[in-house]
Image 1 (spheres, helix red, strand yellow):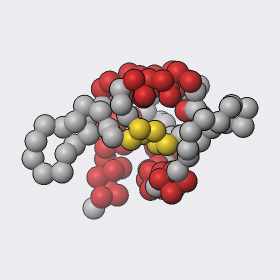
Image 2 (tube, helix red, strand yellow):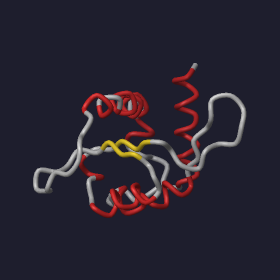
Image 3 (cartoon, rainbow, N blue to C red):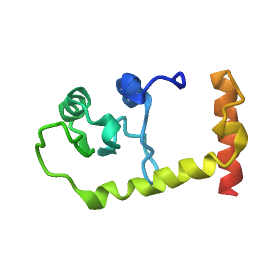
Length: 120
């Protein structure tokens, strides 16, 4: 959770450190994903270097003012659509879209309830 005015790139490394990727079937979760996909807001040298150092592939388009290096796979980038649609569905709940809950724990609880409601 970040403040409403902060960009997510500020806490990107913390997010990557705390996340775990659940395996299909049994077994311990992986501590890092195979690939990270993000929008142009995540296109920074620092983030790209961080992901490369850890052996994580990335699908992030370059900004117009950057020198383009490497290939960009549009078909993989289109898969982000599923995640964006999930956020759209969650924001249909007014309580989540306007963030009535000021405490992070309460907001995460409301997100969990909304996710359960959508799942059912």
